[in-house]
Length: 234
Length: 234
Image (cartoon, rainbow over all chains, first blue to last red; front, top):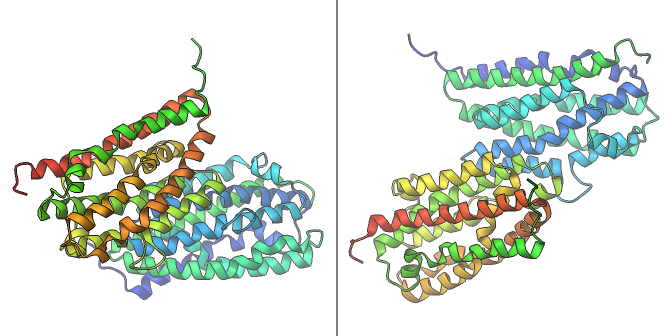
């Protein structure tokens, strides 16, 4: 039995991009969010639960660094940590997410103490962090490729929040204003890494599986939030 | 049986500083290095073996980040990675170490392919990286406190290299010119963290044990290098 031939870069990229269908842009919760159908309680729950995912991202990205022996890769990847944590208190993606929470009527205290975080959100996020800690670094990079699909979703969301949720102070929407350009650049770098470092068919298959796993993580988070609010009045 | 009372900050700091006696400044190999008694082969061996430790530092520090849930700690600690890896190719502490290797007559290729790295150096360094990956982040911070003692040693070394090893191009000594100020600042931050976050006696004891372990790591590296050259002509 011989090992399968590697896919061409084009076919490999196509196999990765095919996961756009499994991305969480079309999850019912996101569809209702963008249609203006979420009540205040469910929207706040979504924000507070997503915080749990956001807050782990710097540590997830540090786990990739910790496993990566290539200085030039680390030198670019470390910027993800700087972007999320910010260079000073109150700056960076995670501070922007907390500003969104406050603009939506949550206190920072009740978000960061995680009282609203659902077990399903915790389990899904923890699985992603554990994946980044324990799998080869390039698979964790591949898992990050959901960012290929996120900028369009975030730009759409920004419009929807302005249009349908005018009770949220627009000053709190900075995350969705800043993030798409960062995600575009980060995703391009991750795609370059995956296509460069996954040279065998086994590595390519592992990268595709990692992206599929990540889609499961994201959808499981929304499933958990939506389940809690099913039947609740909107 | 009651838990022991925490040490006062002064007593805790004293217990940490007491490890200056176990630091590798007084290892016979370092003493001979500073006295000008190393032959070219042993000096090159020391440089090539120390590279293995140096190259792991960014990943060791990323492991601390990956385990640390405190954004303000990560925001300062991430600078260690930037300092070692540099902001661009050819910059940073590790590039400076490779420049030292070249100035001492080694090729970059023979250093980075690790052909000269001794098993004992590998085992000691790997133990340190594993420690940072698996122990609480504050213990890995405590282990880094050997840097309390390193600036003085490096300043002395810079003079010794200029004086006794004039066959090394002084342009290659940048590591020892740049590093002491960085190490001073990094050690002050680490000391602040350890005295802030180790509040129970058990945590204080674990921090002291971590620093003791780290002294063992460093000395074991030099033992391995020295053992290989014992009896060789200098």
